[in-house]
Image 1 (cartoon, rainbow, N blue to C red):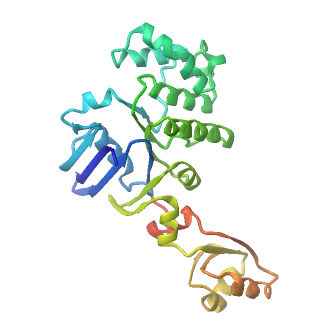
Image 2: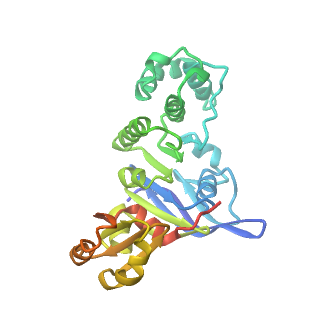
Image 3: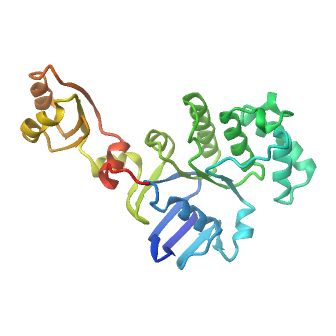
Length: 304
C-alpha cells in the first residue's frame, strides 16, 4: 500500500500534559481516514503535527514523502486544509476568495481562473460567484471553504469537523462532495463528532482519548471488535428500576444514562419478550453502531 502519511511514536507535551502520547498511523492514497475522540482527546493537535504547523517533542512524520516539519512548506503545496472555523475574507466575493487563496500557492491568475468553473460547480456556488461572503448561508460558506481547499488540486485534504453547525441538507451535500474526492483518488484526513458521518465517509478510523489511539480499523471492524451486535434502548421514568431487577438476566451488558437504559445483546429475543411484560416502558431495538463503540471506549461523561 502506498502511504501518503506516516507517523511514528508522536509525542507532544503542553504544560506537562501529554496532549499526543506516542501515536503511530499510516494513511494510504485514496482513503478517507477519520480521527474520532471527545473534546481534548488530541485530534486537532494531531492534525497540526501532521501538517507541520507545530513540531513534535519526539517521533517521526512523513507527508507526501517529505519529512515534517522540516520540509512542511514543500509538502503543503500538495495539501488542502478545511479548518474547524470558516476564515473566509468578508470583503471579497466568492470568486475573489478563491483567486486570492490560489496565489498563496504561486498559481497564476490565469490558472486559477481556469479552475474557477469546476470549483464553483463542485461547491454548488456557480450562481453566487460575484456575491460577497457575508450574504452567504452557513452551508454556502462551508462549501466555499471546501472549494478553496481544492484550488491547488491537492493530493491530501485535511478536514477538521467539516460539517459542524450545518443543517441536514448541507451536511449531506458535503458528504456527497467528499465521496467524489476519494473516488478521484484524493486522500482525506477527517475529524468529526458525528458518528454517522464517520460511518458513511471513512474507510478507516482511529479512536483517540487522552492523546492515545485506543482502537483502529474500519467502521465495521470497530463495531464487530468492540460491541455486541444488537442494542435495545429502554426509555421511561421506571426504566432504571426495571434495569436493576431484570436487565442483568437478559443482557450481556447494560448501561443506565438518565431515564434511558442501553442493553447490549447478541440475541435480543429473550429481552424483547421480557419487555412485553412491561407496557409502561418504551424501547427501540436496533443494530449496534459506531456511536455505541465510541461511548464504550471513551465513556458517557461530558468533556469540556
